Length: 415
Image (cartoon, rainbow, N blue to C red; front, side, top):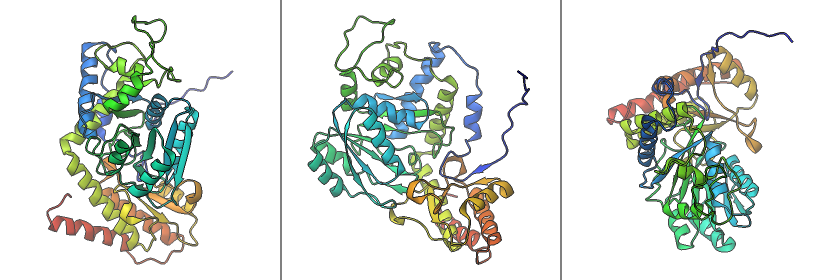
């Protein structure tokens, strides 16, 4: 066997303007380079406590059970669902994109009886439609995505929590794609469980999943608490054991709580990064961050329209931080994306399922929600489209986006 030596890792420079991941804020990367400490070192448990308090601010909640699940945003989703769902329980999943299908799959794997309602991709549900489905299905849990990047839609949640409370239903939502770029209020909206990831509007790398649980959700989870063999604390197990060890939120809550009952070794560098993502967001101010995403998203929307591209879906319910556009007739969508990457070092996305090869998805999120990134992406896209034979107004994309920025500046808005 021949050993092949490898050089030091050196990724190519890229401007990630797809639906995520995005370029991490350099301050987050610097925080992640800090030295490791032991998982029970007072400084480490202190950082864990700080993370809990910071993410209460991010989620706009007073939930004591606000912490991190080690893993990508999908790890947070799976931890929430497998810990809240007992086999045989009825779960309602309204689906309006790829990630609703993901919630359904995880719920099925958790042993739930899953009822679904589906909307055409590019649309969202009304509160009345969801309440009617709850009345028809009588679920114990509603699992609903807020922002689905596969369609770019932002599902309104403001009225859903009250509907769930009125019918005795727990309410879980995935806000991976929307948190910090769109309004979200866990307590005011009656959310029982919410999970996210760092790699979109929070401006970090994938690998840590913030989660917050209401007292109602915690009670359900703790009703299934079992301590693993080898670290028994003298308490008796309760209820049906959660099927996953790693994603057992009852044990994870004990690990993050005052008891510090050992579960896994905390992903220290990711915790540093998650802490810095939240610290920077709260330092900027949630309202200011959402306004920034709204501004640069509006500029990108105007820009692609200025290039003559047709926007996909219900624009009134589009997330601030990503837009989908139909690939023009005569343009090879994958070849254009490759040209953007090779010629300009800019990544934009395609989509999944019924939209694969039919739309591009262009993000303006986190560290990349900036004027220079928007204008550079539009200028590059114009050149790629022109090379593919599209008939465009020269400078139409950059010009339309610039007008949005000029109007915002004239009104004293974010820059």
